[in-house]
Length: 202
Image 1 (tube, helix red, strand yellow):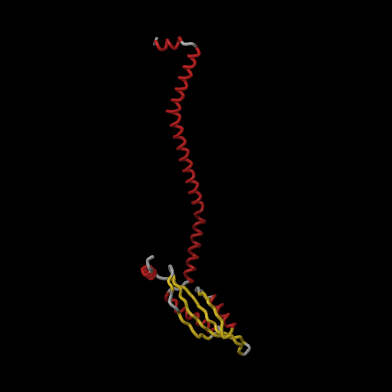
Image 2 (cartoon, rainbow, N blue to C red):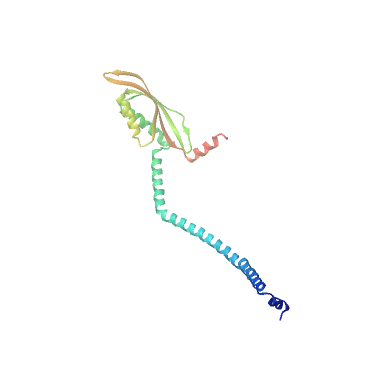
């Protein structure tokens, strides 16, 4: 028999128990350190990866479920854009639009004292097209003119309205009105590029 084992066997019972406990603890520690902890860490990592994948699946499922709704919203936005495009004339339509405005004023019973287009002001993708207007006529005719302009299929804003020379003629209140009519037109691609080139560098 191994002399070391004989020495252990000759030890008192308490010491034998103590050695047995120490050996058991060392073995348990080795098992935990070399077998359990690596597997535990691997399992924790796999659980985190699984949760991440489940989250991605949930998000993608939500997006997939919302696709019909998003398509409807996309189609609606396209329709609204198409409608907006019809409300902004291109450069070829501006003269006819301005002619329509003067025709509306004359049909309302107004006399045009001035109708002077001003230089356009380019914006991002469109340009302001302002026109100084001075007309004379009755309040009723002026109101009808503004209402008719508001009902045009194209966007025309009337602002800077000023009344002057108010007087009664044959029991009708007559006035002279000065205003600024502003419509808008789309810039074509070449105009947008030229405008960007001409813009001063900051």
